[in-house]
Image (cartoon, rainbow, N blue to C red; front, top):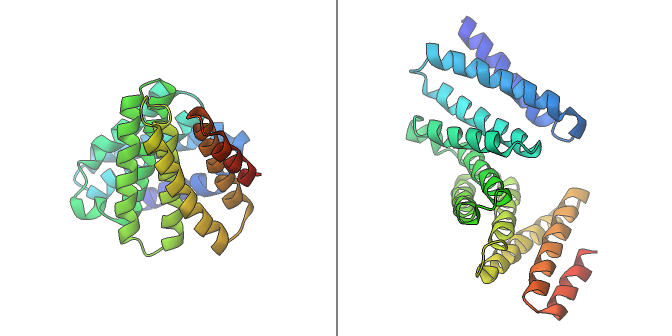
Length: 231
């Protein structure tokens, strides 16, 4: 009973950290401390309740969240460590639990996060592999999801960051452009269905990055068109 109550309390803490502090940049230090506290709690429970597959799932998810926070704060080695630990823990989760659309989406996001860490460290081959795996997982999650709007947004994000990563890989400009254009297609559907400041900002960001790629590949007219649409 105490175990269940404690676990429920930490689950609620994680939801509060993820939701309420998401848009509060000055709270990142607090968010990290709370997540690390939750991670320590799960690690202790894992020692005592190692036969609970649901605990491995939540610990893996928490590792991914901590990886995000370290990446935001610029601690790339610790970020990569936590993402990698999430993937290792996932192997201990029974297949039915790790094949839910929610957890697949969490895994996809973590692979994209680790891809950005690799890119920042100039490890572009590893970055491309992780970004492609993130997209594959998100496509699988989207096929299973009952929330097409959220899935479309997550899929657009994966295509966008695949474009960002591939744009840094020599000889991959065509693939980067393809990824950016697919992100744009999805983002335009989102903006048309539900116009909003954040959706418009993401669309403009993709157009700007596409414009930079087109300019770099000596297609100035198309680059100017993309920049103009981003305004």
